Every structure is written in C-alpha cells, then in structure tokens.
Image 1 (cartoon, rainbow, N blue to C red):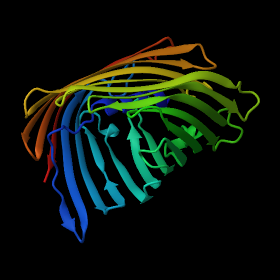
Image 2 (image 1 turned 180 degrees about the horizontal axis):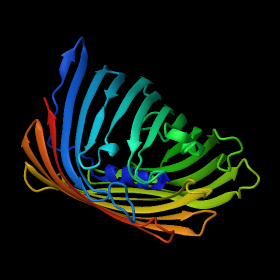
Image 3 (image 1 turned 90 degrees about the vertical axis):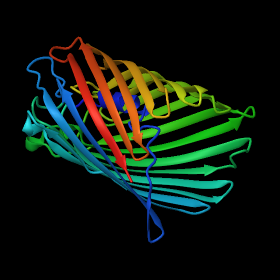
Image 4 (image 1 turned 180 degrees about the vertical axis):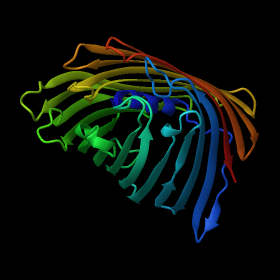
Length: 386
C-alpha cells in the first residue's frame, strides 16, 4: 500500500516547526550577479520500524546526507530562485532500503504594478518511500512533477483582491512488475479566491477549487472531479497573532458509474501566536478528502496539530509538536487513528552551524488487519552553511 494521507500528515507536521533552526544564517556567494547559497544537513538516526509494520519490524541506523543549493536573483519588482536538493539515505542494517532522492524547483515572483502580480513554480522529484509500501520490505519508487501559477489582481491595501490559480501534477511509479501502476495519475486544478477587507487587519475570504484526477489505468474507479467551496477570514493583529480559518463543503464525482459520488464538509484552520519574539505557538487543523488507497474510493482525513518553538537563550532552542489524525476509508469498514509527536533541542554552536538532538514517535491504531504500527526515531543532525 502507499498511504498518501499519512504522507500528507507528515508534511503538515513538518510545517509547524521547520527543520532549519532559527539561528542558522547562511551566507551566499556572488556568481555573475546571482546569489548562490549552499548548505548541508548531515544526520544520524536510529529508526526501530522504518517500514511501519505491525509484524516483522525492521530497524536500522540511518545516515542522511542532504546538500542544498540555491541560486537566486532579484530586483525591485521580481525574484527568481532555483533549488537543487539531492538527498542520500543509507540504511546500515538493511542495505536494500538505501536510496537517493532528487528534487529540483524553480520559483518566480513578478510584480508588474501594485495591482498585478504573478507567481510561478515548477518542481520535479524522484524519491523512494520505505514506509507503507505496496510490498512489505521493498521501497516504492516514485516520480512526481508539478507546475503552479497564481495571478493576483488588486493592491495589497485595496478593499478587494482576487487570486486566480492553475496547477498541473503528474504522479508515476517505477516499481517492478507494474506494482502501484493503478495509482498513477495526472491532476489538473483551477482555483479562485476573493479577499474582501473588513477591517485594518482582517479580510473575509471566499474560495472555489476545481480538481480533475485522471488516473492512467483504463476505467479506473478512482478517476474523478472534485469541487470545493470555502468561506472564512484571515487576520494579522500586529506581529503577535495571525490566523486563517476557512469552512466549506466538497463534492467528489467519479467518472466510473460503479463508484459512489461523495460529499464531505471541509475546513482549514491555521493559527499562530507569538507571546514573545522568541516563542511561537502553532495550531493547524483540517478536514478534507484524500485520494483512495487499498481498494477505497477516497480517504476522509481529519487532523489536528499543535506546535511550540521556544528560544531559551540566543543559542538554545526547543521544538515540540504533536498531532492526531483520523482516516476513514470510504467503501471499506476501515478507520485509522494516527498519532505523531516530535521533540527536539537545537544548539546554535556557530552562525554557520546548528546541532540538533531529536526524537519522533509515530503510532497508527487501525481496525484493519496488520495495518497498525508503532515507530520510534532518535536523531542527531548537523546543519552547516557558509
């Protein structure tokens, strides 16, 4: 299996407390007018269940080598950034799990006038997944490509502002024997968001999203069109409190008549509170439909995440985050209750060097056979820059 809902939850967890410490201040090199910034993350961890299995668990010491190269150019009205991030994972006790990932991304922001702005980004990734794989003990090999565009009309201080967005993504598998080929798809999305200022620090929001999931497998029961409408507000009260709340409804219409169309309430909450400049509390919650897995039409995913980051001194920072998630598999009698927690201590040894000690706990309590697991990861990492 390849449970994308778990992966999405991990990404949300990472967004609470990004891995790069506050204190690291990378310096760039001027290369023909471009700013070139290299960094390196080196980590050693012990993972007691990297396959996330209920039985026949596999554990290993894992070395991660992650150089990061950024090339950036900017002027008064535009900025462009190119990122290349190769990452190698070495599983010392289970060599078959070792792999190398590649990520290339290009971002561009253009402000033509104070009323017209355009953001573009393109990303290509190639990576392997060791957990929740289609075949126990064998990595899933994945390629993904995506392109996003967002045009904004309206001055930042105007009473009204409109975003018009479009995106396209491809998901492919390079597994042997066609394993997971039924999950390969192209995804096309269109979205529009209207912002209306209702106060000096508050704006009302009305959003509409239309997404087409086109699976490559002929007559796939998962090919569908999804529509979502959300309304809410966002605010920024000084530098201490920011928030974004949206509530709405989504409908998923399947192309195959044998698949039952689905309706689902949906919502997004993102709150950040900084009682001090060196302390930040974060609350993120959402409910939405993820793509189907393990024979299900779709997965109804609900999650709540909490994070706290605190700088005790100029050099010592702690990070804590915890999350709960519930996944209901439509078309099956299966529900997963997921828990995830992170603790970390970051020591800013130098301007160019952060040392991090961390622990992560993951637990999935599923009512399906052989789908529950417990996982513990202990880590030390070094973030190095110029």
